[in-house]
Image 1 (cartoon, rainbow, N blue to C red):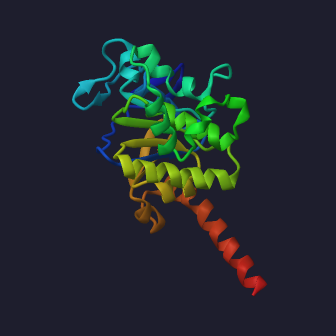
Image 2 (cartoon, rainbow, N blue to C red):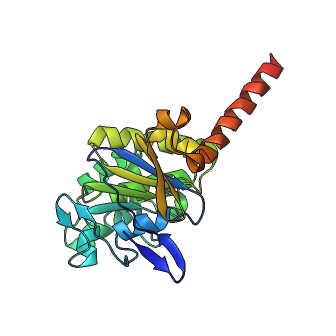
Length: 245
């Protein structure tokens, strides 16, 4: 895949295979190209060159809405429609596709993201940030896509809610057999949630490692600069605990 914005090479000839059933985290500093890459997969940004093959089919051919129905997408800012009830927000993709969701299906989706089905009749402004983001996940899964993309899905949440929702999403991934590609700038989050961590820098993937390998020092300079942040935080916390003792 390739995408240039003038002289800026946002995504610079990236080739990536994602195994079915895996949970991959795409990590990098701001401007590294990770969100641009994710948006090209979902056709929110048109690539200058490249293809996206999903289950043997080119997702960049044919109408974009039809391609997007095969790919679940969770936005950082959730993007719920404020004038629609929770059930309507979850079912918006099915309604556009001519496949309306039943009440039972909406209830099932809410239960999958660990919410009470009674929330189906609530309005988004009646919910907490964590609840709204869970509804965003339910909406992304409504049409049972084979691939789930998540773009900084927990970035706007407080640390406690963020950690709980991250664990919940990982458990959901395992429980229903998702294939997940998540963009995050938080290396600790990537190491704790993903099976595979991809580090981007200046439009290219510069490291592709298992979390344990990164912690052990693999991946090169850029990756280790990012691993150094949670490692230093862990050491500082350990020092605080020892000082209390």
